[in-house]
Image (tube, rainbow, N blue to C red):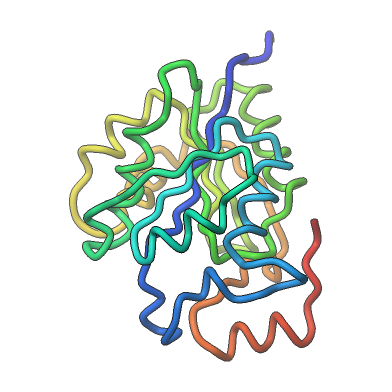
Length: 203
């Protein structure tokens, strides 16, 4: 079977208000760089191109964090409406030459370039419209959507548009299994303290 060619874009969701943290977690330091900059660097190293970073809350400061990195940022003016609005902003910005798009969250520091590259490779090797991540029974980003699913992502309503599309196409999806430890995100101060104190980040 010939491999699917063409770019796989990345959509890194980084527009949220970090309301549970009390201040913007994307600017916190991990291993010598901000959470946001580290997420962008790993996404680029995994082979996503172009990489679209969806900004909203404190977008000017976030854009400065991206200086010098080969990515593009997309402003979601409706970021306070939640993650679905950011997902749709990202999908709308994917250039026409991109064959698919991988959706990632900026606050998941244990997603490695190797995980991203493996998902791209699986997509290219198959005809699946979807490649999903499974963390010992929990489905969570990154998720890779073929362009054929973009319209569904844009027209879904309610909570969790991405999850709805995953559920609808679960039977057609390729699934990559990751350890539960890679699922960790940074939502509350205790999460950040745990990541800072014990778990080094693979890059």
